[in-house]
Amino acid sequence: MSVRHQVDQQLADLSEQNAVRLSLDDDGICPIEFEDGRHGFVYVPPTDNLVILCMSVAPVLLDEPGMLFGHLLQLNYLDDQTQGAALCLDAGESEIFLRYSLPASRLDHDGVARLLGALDERASALAAYLSDWQRKRSQADGDEDDTAEQLDDMTRPDPRHFV
Image (cartoon, one colour):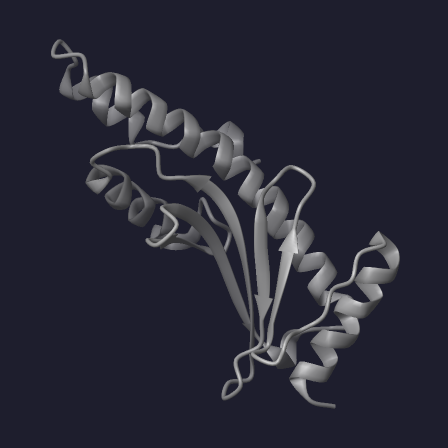
């Protein structure tokens, strides 16, 4: 069974459980909308034996997002905050995404559903954290009395968000 067929079958099973139609298009992409307004997709590249899942996390809210990009790289470092997924940027949409890929050989009979659920949980936690981080950073930009120590504290994720 091809990777595309395997993933499409899992999406069809997920469709039945959730009363929505999910299937890969001709390009190997299945867009997904979540109840909380976030969106994402499942992608099966034509030349790889990979399955890629992406989910929106948060919009880029800062006018000067350079520090945010550095912070995203920091969160990706060693995967401790992303649990093996990677934070990415869709520059065209000014949106942060959480991306996870795995070899198709590691995908079991309900792997797409389980991975989407896990990605949804992780994206929710990161959404709350990154929205708060950007809000604090935006306020700090307007406050000239901010100390380096206060800014340094904002670069450390609160571990309660990632339990």
